Length: 142
Image 1 (cartoon, helix red, strand yellow):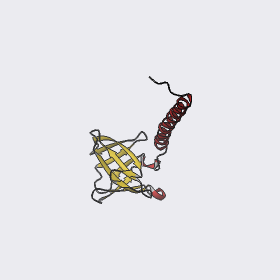
Image 2 (cartoon, one colour):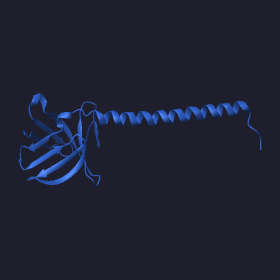
Image 3 (tube, rainbow, N blue to C red):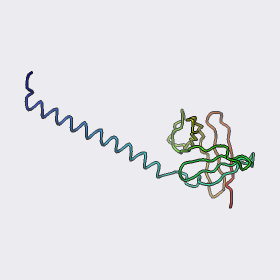
Image 4 (cartoon, rainbow, N blue to C red):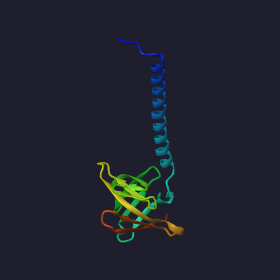
C-alpha cells in the first residue's frame, strides 16, 4: 500500500475540517431559524377564544403553546396543532400569512389570514385555501 504525501494528507484534513464546520453551522442556523419562528408569533392576539359568526355554537380556542381546541355546543370536538407562516401546503407568499392546522393524524388545513383583531376590532377573518370560503369569528369577551 502506498503512503499518502503529507500535502495530500493536510489538504484532506483541511477539507474535512471545513466540511464538519459547514455542516455544524448549517444545523445550528436551521435550529436558530426554527426557534426564532417559534418564539415570534406574528399574530400573538390570535391566542384567545373565537366564536364563529355564522354558527355561535362553534368556538376555536388558540393557545400560546400552539394548540387549537375546537368546540361545538361547548363540547370538545378536536385538539390540533397550529402554526402561522408564509407557507402552508401548496400555498406560499412572502406578503401573506397562513394559518396551518395539523390534526393528530397528520392531515392539514390551510387558511389565509385576512385579519386578526385589526384595530382592536375583536374579529378574526380567515379564508380556507382549498375552496376560498371565508370564516369570520368574534373574540369572546370574558
